[in-house]
Image 1 (cartoon, rainbow, N blue to C red):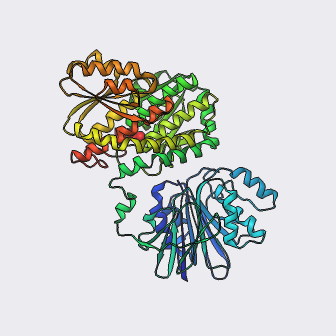
Image 2: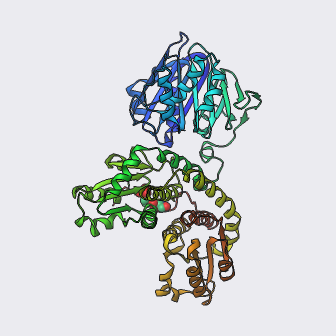
Image 3: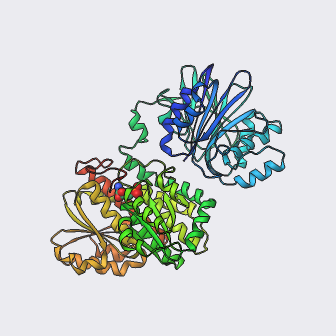
Length: 597
Ligand code: M6R
């Protein structure tokens, strides 16, 4: 998840400290390289960039001394091209008199690079941010002014991105938005632009939100907007932002958890587009395919994703993969593994001590280590031969939500790849279904909530593909409502826990379309003993007439329906936590990353 920032000032001044500060604000998005460029009056461009963290690179390359009347900063999370100085952004055009940087993915990067090379341009990196610059250069060479050249470039660049660009000899910066976030700010004697609001708020509270298909021209004292489609000018006045910095970071939501729940469609699409083209992910798949035994290893929520992953591997690819909790891997499997075996270690943070302990033991046995991880630069990314980036950006709330769904989706993607089946359709299909599901379930959750507020004991049951979802739902409910919620296989309920059912005892069933008859049996075992059955599943009359309450999901394939059935459980946990008077973002006794044994 890259981040961009640009500033234009009336006078030439020290821009380095402003760019460094903006970089710190954007750094929560995750990144591996940092770069800054400033424009001087004498038409020279000062460009400094390298691999590393913002403070480290800024001090090594002395960003603080950079001056100018226009500045651009970029933090890059590697997608096209390895993290390296040459692939770091911003990028120059062929002649070195334009500089620009982007955020997002240009999916036809490789095709465009070839065209630019054939057209005689100097292409220095593998990075798609450079492609954005050359796409503008192409039309500048054909005689267009900068604004028109950007309009034309927009038609050539496929994917979701935002980018900022400037030309020596002018006074302006330009930015464009297509799918990725972009916000502009207007202050006393300057204007600025950024991937998100928090990096602008320390400078100004006069904000203009940019929509897809709009080009922003940043003058030192005003902002102009044009529509890409017809080049027409758009009038939009700045609005004053009154919210606090913390609530700005929450993007208008009352809690990080709710924001992160609603970010799921976006980050799912971003990750899928990213991994679709990734060479590293291709190699990861090859390594998985070559394993004698394949282990999927994680803790907590990440372990639940492993469990779902193993079902996808078996059902879709016919490959047995062994899901196991990281500490248990050490006791149960490590003594028997060797160099022919592969462990895919799954972790949001990449720093969970239980996971790192298991990796240590696996490495001692010569086992191959792969990763699936959200935080780039974490220990897991460093020790993995190849890793799949979850690309969720920062997950701040302690309960994992968007990282779970991206883990589950990544497993579905890997299973399809291992089965040699197409995966491109997922990036269209899944985000749209997630959005629809969130819209459809929100009012239904509100109806169920009052029934459960006072309950301190409940069960959450699933079968087959929904078994891991039931475990995950139960973990979410326990973690932030402090009620005791046990997750289990629905068919196991009759082997003991059924005896605990009393009048109105709540049991939540999570049902995939193909398991309706089996779930209906389980529901009736509970209902006839006085329990209250709540089902999350497809809109099916068998579920409707047998259960007390049915939370319906949109119609979709079983594999996707199973993973999306976690959304109602996330939302239910969130609302119950609030209703019971707790802070869902920061539950007591827990921390986001458990770096202890
Ligand atoms: O960073 P990790 O994915 O390795 O963390 C593992 C667990 O600590 C984590 O999933 C935890 O269970 C969550 N807080 C659950 O919401």
